[in-house]
Image 1 (cartoon, rainbow, N blue to C red):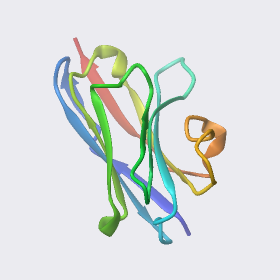
Image 2: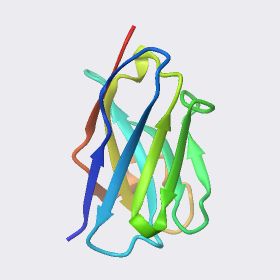
Image 3: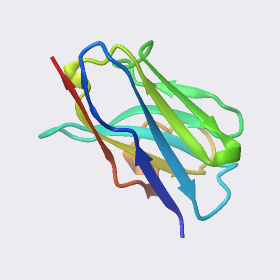
Length: 126
């Protein structure tokens, strides 16, 4: 059974930093891409960042480029999202997702991922 567990969400002031973690279990994720999405109240879930597991190629939404960094620790089956210079508009539930399709066009889409975590709340106060 595949399981993704996010952690690290918290209340932080604008300009602060947080690091989210997503621990994957249930199978080897060496060939999986991992993504981070977020959903703010009343809004649709949106892509934040993704990383191709083996190659380490990274992809970002324009809204977080230069502020957020996605990385992975293959030995720990864990993906991280380092979030710096946080803004109130970054407030959302952050979800981790995984899949192992070929190519890259699906990486930024919700429909591209089969496995999802339960989410972790990030709140940025002004």
